[in-house]
Length: 133
Image (cartoon, rainbow, N blue to C red; front, side, top):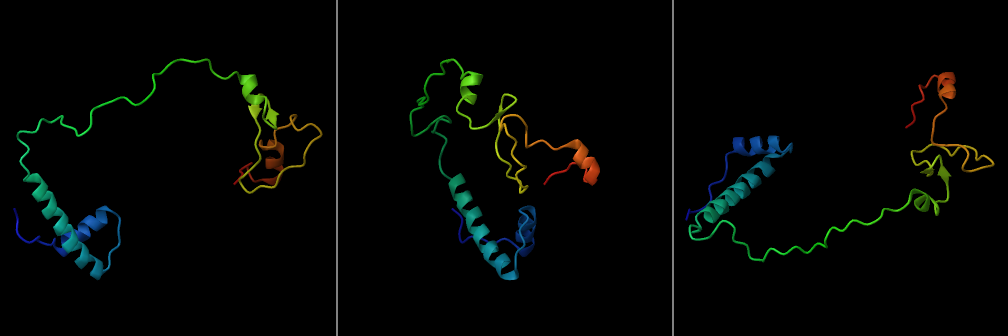
């Protein structure tokens, strides 16, 4: 086994920090140099463990499939899926806007218009290109 861990150089620590996209202070560089040295020393100790007699497939637990069998079942019917929905539009769930826009005025029939679609003529009139946040 190795003796005391050898800390990494400042250059090595800064290189690792750059790869990890970390900005380190001078104190952090010194701290991490020592800690990374300890980690590398520990990895070296693990590498020295005698594993020649251990089969590569050894595992402490028996391999058991805990998942259920994959049995095909009938899918939920389209109309049955939409039946409990509070609002439906063109065979799809209609949900409220969440992107910070005000809700458009409600029509007499909540299922008749799609409030989530932009009016292309309004976009041309305002000159905003129809972009919505």
